[in-house]
Picture 1 (cartoon, rainbow, N blue to C red):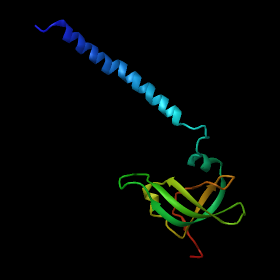
Picture 2 (cartoon, one colour):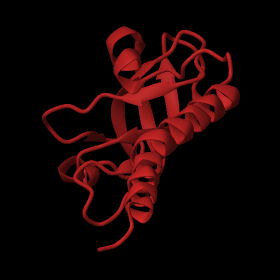
Picture 3 (spheres, helix red, strand yellow):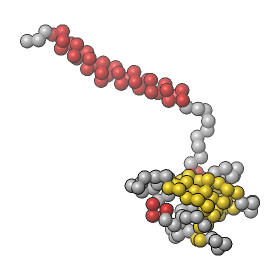
Picture 4 (spheres, rainbow, N blue to C red):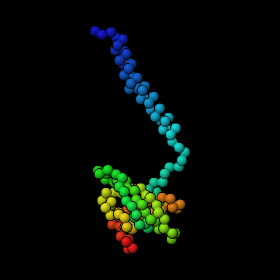
Length: 138
């Protein structure tokens, strides 16, 4: 029969491993995340731009899919020439999640409906039920 001291040491080790250590690690992780967090405002979400943005139209200049082959909604980086609110057209790069089924319809030269933030720094493509309209000038 083994002595009682090693059994006590094993129980103590298990207690430290599964009770004390997780709390110490969690405290360290929470402290690190709080330290790394900035007081900057949160980024503007695509859903917020779509809900409250100014309507406009854009010509797709470039398209680059950034997601993997199996992603149902890959992230897509699009270069757009935006015309909104009667202002002069301006170029903007938009990164947005788009359903893979709609990805084949968005290509250079196609005109798409967009929503733009009031400061014209961000935009989001409105995904309609039908395919986008090709540019008449192209």
